[in-house]
Image (cartoon, rainbow, N blue to C red; front, side, top):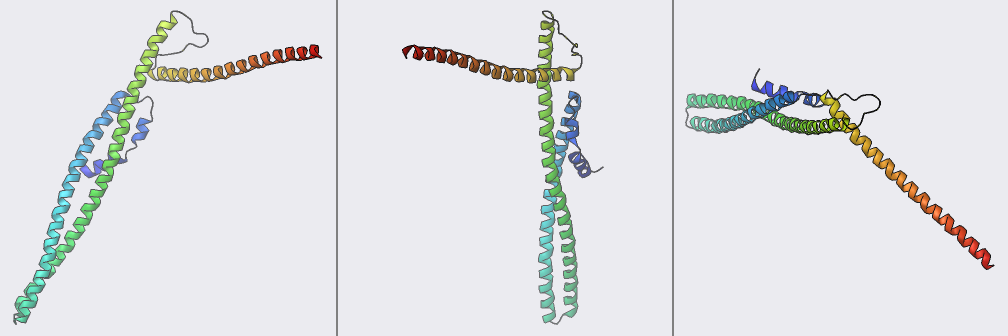
Length: 224
């Protein structure tokens, strides 16, 4: 497999399928990061190589195009001087130079296509690398949070018994999901409690207002 095919294959790989697996081992992510870094380095070298190649081909094409004009001028000069054989020879060189310029044009076009494809793949590879590094960083963060939660849970178990179904922290993913669920439940509980507190406060105010209103009515009745 050529380097271009390898770069194309890795750039087109469904890395998000790997990253979407919440139970992806750290080693698999690290290996993917190393593969991407190596491929990006190879892609940069190939890109530089094709850039140089395109430049060289363009210079050769320009030289061939100049030769086409020069051989034409020479053919005209030879023909004016009555040297038809020399003019014929100059025209032959002109045709060959023109054919070479055409072949170089095709090579330049092909090299430019590969160059542009390499640039696009390099952008994709860099995106893959950033996503993989971010996923690994998040995995490390979640792992630390899960370990901290597990340590806290161990201390808490000594003081109280968890009612209902026992929670299994043997799996790393279960630890992470448990922590995330607790945070979500805590957020919901806090929101509900805030709403309840507000409702209680409102009812207390209304009760005081009702009491004072009743007292005010009685006072006005006595004045009448």
